[in-house]
Amino acid sequence: MNSQIYGIRAVMEAINAGQPINKIFVQKGLKGELYKELESTVRKNGLSLSYVPVEKLNRLTRNNHQGVVAQISPVQFHQFEELVEQVLSKEQLPLFLMLDGVSDVRNFGAIIRTAECCGVHGIIIPKNGAAPITDDTVKTSAGAAFNVPIAKVDHLKDAIFYLQSSGIVVTGATEKADDEIYDVDFNQPTAIIMGSEEKGISPSTLNIIDHQAKLPLMGKIGSLNVSVACGVFLYEVVRQRNN
Image (cartoon, rainbow, N blue to C red; front, top):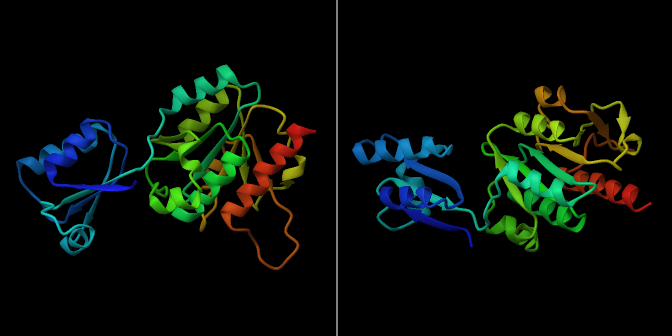
């Protein structure tokens, strides 16, 4: 599933062929005309490079990597606007899930699994700062990663504005909210946004969404694991829509 390619030309060919690239690792200090061509290709395709010591690359592969190793996602990503329009044309009550910086691959896999079980029509993640889809992600998702469309976007805020302009109400899960999840009406076109494990939803994103909602917590711990919280939110949507 999650495979690696190595060598500058091979990586460029993969990018130009539209392969779903998770990460590109480049040896620190790499120079030369071919490397400049790779940089240009990466920029044109909206990807980013991670500069690492050569030891990291040697751990990733024993082959002649020429200072470049790329990891390819086991699933194909969807184009965001096309996904939204496709869902809107078919569904009366679309349900999207947005992830703002969820970085743990197993949390991501668990979220994808729950999303599939709850009938989520699409998952939207940022290109940078999100967990990659790896073998572990697919395994934790119990294969659901192949069933739920996933779209990557340059900026989550632009995606929120696009959803809102398409008539979709965006609700953010945050313990800072005044309203509880049970106060929100999910019997309308909905997108739910979950924040990162450490910081939650970014303040600038909270400012532009339609609703903020929290889960009631009875114990001493101040928050739930993001995949568990996501499951509670999604099943509240299911509960409301099935009543």
